[in-house]
Amino acid sequence: MTVAFRPRPSVVRRDSGLYAYERALARRGLTPIAGVDEAGRGACAGPLVVAAVILRKQIDGLGDSKLLSPAVRERLFAQITRSSHVGIVIIPPGEIDAKGLHKCNISGMRRAVAQLPCDPEYILTDGFPVPGLPAPSLAVWKGDQVAACVAAASIVAKVTRDRLMVALDVRFPQYGFAEHKGYVTPGHRLALETHGPCPDHRFSFVTVAREMGENEMGAGVA
Image (cartoon, rainbow, N blue to C red; front, side):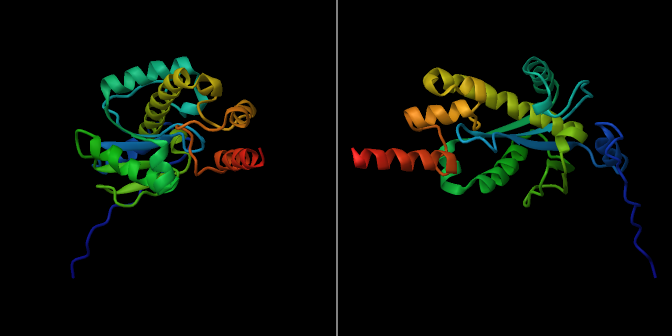
């Protein structure tokens, strides 16, 4: 009886460097490898931005976008977009309200991968598994800190979203979007209490919905 050969599984230590996942998969012939991440999941205003990246060369200095300075993120964004395959999906607040955040996130990851100009042989996602991807995939806990392609995707997503929020600040300067990028801060709460939400807030989020309810109650009493 012939026994099918199965390669021994690779064990990747989380302290083996940012390119350890890519190297382990490449040894199994699984290239190219796409990393997928999002920005704006926890914000109560502005879009959700999802990015997929296939690195075509090693880029020094990659890391979790949240831990990098804006200047470093911008520099790395330019390097990544110039030398890598990139897919970006922007999901507006209205779609998030209509479909739900997690559903939009999953759909956005599939769409970002579909935008890549070549098909990945393997996909690494940050944090949670994504069904329906076109290749085998692995959800990596804090992937933007341990996998280079996921870190690159996190930088692309965050820089893209930050730029959109700065542009939104020009339209609605009373909210301070350029500073807090739509996340819930004391200043953002105060702006919501004072002005109510704008069309680019996520009305399904409890912070915004609470202000909507309070404003409507106040209007009814008046």
